[in-house]
Length: 303
Ligand SMILES: C[S@@+](CC[C@H](N)C(=O)[O-])C[C@H]1O[C@@H](n2cnc3c(N)ncnc32)[C@H](O)[C@@H]1O
Image (tube, rainbow, N blue to C red):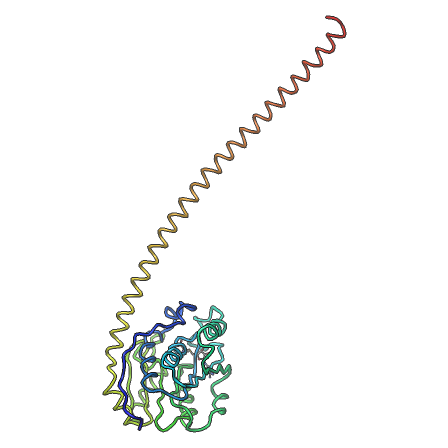
């Protein structure tokens, strides 16, 4: 078993938010970032493999912890970045492009590998008993989660931990998610499991149940739930502030548009006035021409 370490509740800044502010809004994973951060710093893994990175909400939380803790952790992000049945509605943007952008800007110095391919194929590249933390967050169909787990299980170190996302009670289209069904099955046959029942639900399976006991004694999961509520308040306050600024900006734009309209009316009036004056000038010039003509004739005839 690993040496006992104190669990610390950090207050991290997630740098990815600077380049990719939508991560927080889009990803159901966002409520688990603080936990993932503290967990990595507590566990100090040598190797993390993530099956399903998508926009990178979870990835960048892990990487932030690795960097802030100056850990010597190798990180593998595995994904096709093509999406699956559960992310179809989220695939409106350049997902892989945004992922690469954050990786390049914030974590380029870290030991990160992007494996663009299917989990099944990438699994062969890893030696048995070589992974400390495995995060399973791919397709949530029951058979896919089961396959990912069974295929990758031999890759885990004897004191490794597998994290499963979306194992909570939330329903998808009125149905229990396959990831939840599989998780419940797993909990019946394995010792050393724990769950964070919010933000979709994050399940932990400790290969060494003794470590799970250590984890339960050290970390207070309810504290993370409270943090989410706090985060929600902060986010809501920020949204309120931004929407107020937006309303003001819209009112200002309406005002400017009104001013432009008035100026255009003036310009039209000036243009019409100028045209009328031009017409009058040419009339006068014509008349002047006629006077000159008449005078020449009268001069010649001596009238
Ligand atoms: C739920 S998303 C991952 C979410 C991410 N962990 C986060 O924090 O936002 C699932 C991802 O798994 C990928 N995926 C699903 N099945 C896969 C497979 N068999 N091989 C490779 N990628 C897969 C999809 O492309 C998708 O991007």
